Length: 451
Image (cartoon, rainbow, N blue to C red; front, side, top):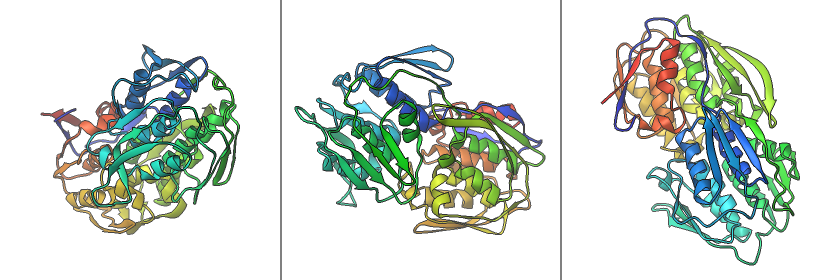
């Protein structure tokens, strides 16, 4: 969709159907990492090739890992163990993926070769100090660019020095914020360390890394918001594995909200991830009074999945903050679309982490709602939305600012607008949902790409 716009027509009929959504980005990143560091052959099924995950895949290819496409949605990885990565002959391009950059920094911090991590303009503005500083504390050699306005902060590009003749040390660290990316980067570095890695965080963030480590037999213990990992003494200790990747609940959220907002609609997303630390979105939908049904269907490598269905609903205002905000942080923009159609005023608090995402998502979400005629105001750690439950929203032209979640939120709001909605700069949607247009079309929406 590079350089093109997305045009969304107001929904003239109900949205109906059952659709697949892209594989979970967070789980896919971690599955690629553990597959590359394993002792044998691994198979990842339902791989979606979203741009973020491709950045991680290509980084490992650049370091000598054999990765093959076996056909639709199946990727084969031949692991090289903890000591088998090779020095890349070029900088590793993380694109727009903060997860790739932060998790790969954890892996590369322990390697006996030099590497460099780069990203696009958006990623190069995002804070990396939260990962760099504790890794340096345990003995890594990492330097980055000083942030232009925060002297204590560093950003990409990150240069990771060679660790020759020694190992990373143990680490006992309290995370300053609940962050799955930071926690995972430190745990990954701990696989190579000489001593244990003990981490605690204010509340439990996404636990995909811990679940996968435990499923693969790694010496990790988790208790509440505290986790402890013993280092691996055998470089070939991680076994090969097969994984049916669950669908990404963050991607499914856009489809499910469309079902809640468009009259007489009923939609289902199949094989959707139901990890409890990721299900804040579902709990938030229930707070809004949305008609929601979840049918568990099993699990793979400790990751539960199932079908999630929504039906059009009369919504009420909610309060999203604290632990619920942490568990739904990526879905806040599309939850704001629910707030836009709810009766009353919804407050989002404790979401200041959104200030340093692909954009300042607090400010950008408030601007987006305003473009549709919905009153919203930001404050330092969140924003409030005064719902407009009756009548169509105001259609218009908006720019995603290169943020995939804002682009897709605008598309869903466009379904309940009073005329065509034009969204500029939609190439970013491929970051997480390459078949977004086709999926909405399959449910009965009318939208097209122009330019």
